[in-house]
Image 1 (spheres, helix red, strand yellow):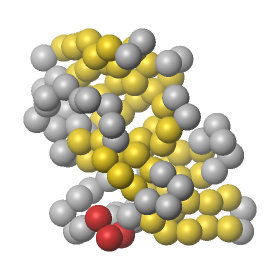
Image 2: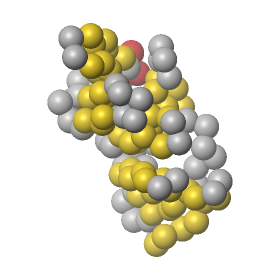
Image 3: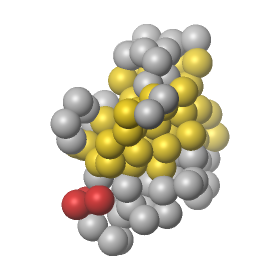
Image 4: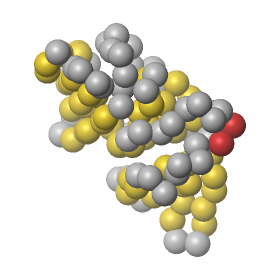
Length: 112
């Protein structure tokens, strides 16, 4: 296990070192994402505006009911998208040398 998210919707999301995502609660669990490939590593996981987002070096993914897809957020161009934080309507994405914040539908650079 790598990261754990308890979502506002009541589900628990657990990323693993084997490129998989466990989703469930109590005694009901399922695995998602193993088909994404060995080169893709899940970094961080957050809940933002009713969505579950996972960061990778190359971008952000969104967990949908039956699959994991590329998040449609029109990300700023960065070298990597490793770290995520979310709260109070704000999403922060940080990489190796910069960070951006999404608030009110607009991306603003925090630092570079």
